Amino acid sequence: MTRQLRRPETGAIVAFLLTYLFFAIFTYTNGFVSWNGTVGWMNLAAELGIVAVPVALLMIAGEFDLSIGSTVGAASMVLAIGTTHMGLPIWPMIVLALIMGMAIGLANGLVVVRTGLPSFIVTLATNFIVIGATMGISRLLTNVTSSSIAVSDSAKLVFAGRWEQANISILWWLLAIAIGLWVLSRTVFGNWIYATGGNLQAARGAGVPVERVKIILFMATGFAAALVGIILGVQWNSGNATYGMGYVFQAPIVVVIGGVLLSGGYGTVGGVAVATALFGVISTGIFYTGWSTDWIQLFLGALLGTAVLANSYVRKMALMGGR
Amino acid sequence: MSRLPILELKNVTKRFGNTYALFDVSIALTPGRIHCLLGDNGAGKSTLIKVMSGYHHATDGQVVFDGEPLTFASPRHARQLGIATVHQDVGTIPLMTIGRNFFLGAEPKKGFGPFSRLDKAKANAIALEQMQRFGITRVKDAEQLVGTMSGGERQVLAIGRAMYFGARVLILDEPTSALGVKESAIVLKMMKQVREDGIAVVFITHNARHAMAVGDDFSVLIHGKVAAGFERGEVSRDELLNLMAGGEDMAQLEVDLEAVE
Image (tube, rainbow over all chains, first blue to last red; front, side, top):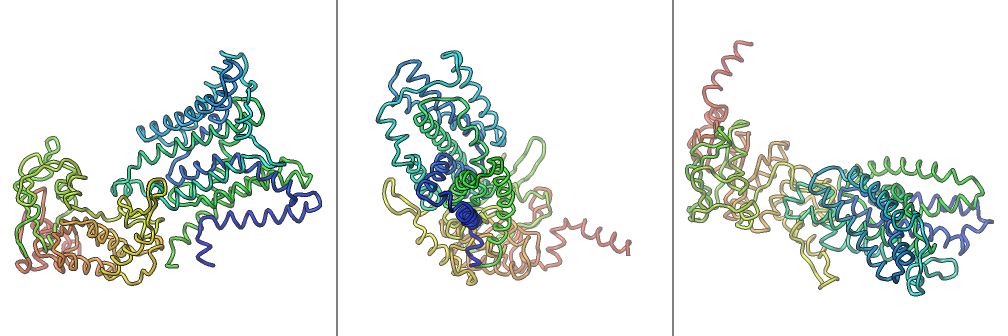
């Protein structure tokens, strides 16, 4: 029991269970626990979850990425401009959007590693640069900043397929979780991620290529953000430069609620997955209660505050005594 | 045991601009001996370690490794030759397990291609075995976070790690200065064990008692010069303390202190 208390994901699991029970009891008659209700919160969690996993790895390595929001929008606009304005097929545009996502990540990584500036500021700047550039270029080419996407059947199936009410993005989310779990807890690269965030000097001294670790994680984050942009674009048949702005803070919020230390070096993918599910439960649960959705923000804020306190306590516990 | 030095500095001078950090320093490190490097802050100990571990090149003089004059291309080069440095506090990562810390940067793997993964069982088993070999019996599980261990145990982990990866020269930068009495004893005991393995140990310390407890050779640095070099038993503790404080300064200090009383 005491051992479990020291695990970084414990807080998220407890919060999830309590919140789920709360909505399950109070909105039982409205169908929150029904199949459709469950699929509802999972759909909502999935899109955020895809990008939250690499953001979690990046934060464990000690860096931030606030540029994800604009990358999501930019990727959707690549599809829109390519397929509608230029009349190109969608699949090459999808590849292009993913490459663009990784290129944005590469730029973030290189600047952070070379200048030693805090990634918080560097990626905040990138966020504005990318959304500004997306809007500017879109307006130049198409006169608008949102535009429809010509979606092929195959693309529709892969990125926006549905089974009853369930979006295929849930599968993408599960895939992201599986990869994240594998990399972080099973691979040598995962060891390097923890070391880079845990003690940069010691990691470097032991021969860990800390710069490469960070750059790869920034690129993975950019890739995931672009993937979400593609999913949203294909789902709604349209691109929009402002898609994904919500993720800028939602992603780090669920990562911290999931038990990742803001200072890096500690956290699990499992915890972040549970925290993302919690986000989905809160966001849809409120609808079932019939209350104003304004309360979602309050709920999230309170959870975030509690999580930060709990995390520092868990860290202390983890460093105390034997087992 | 062979008394031929593994690493030798011959008349080494290191200058930064117009400042001499080291002047005409000669030191020989022999297998199976603990060489204590003593001196006040700013006496040049750090510079000396950096010359020995490939971070600095000597401005003048020679570095001889296994009898051959040599210039380290990089700290990595020195490490590959078996010159390992363990610093006072950096080196271990508190929020990672003992097994993960032990093999950081040289992780054992199993499986092929995309399924290549960390061999945690192997890492944990070896890390635990090495810790226990050096007398850390309190630690029973390599999944324990390093941050839960005491300062002495962490030093043992760092030193054991260097040993496991084939250190021939072990440079210990103030390994006991942040530790209590019992903890220091663990580390000093380990140093004796390391000596038995035929490793050349460099022990940097402020603590004359610790130096006298394990040292075979002693070099006292003052203002970048070797003010005194001697072997075990040639000098008493008081004389050593005197040398470390810079001789005359110490005598003057005593007079000053008496005047205060």
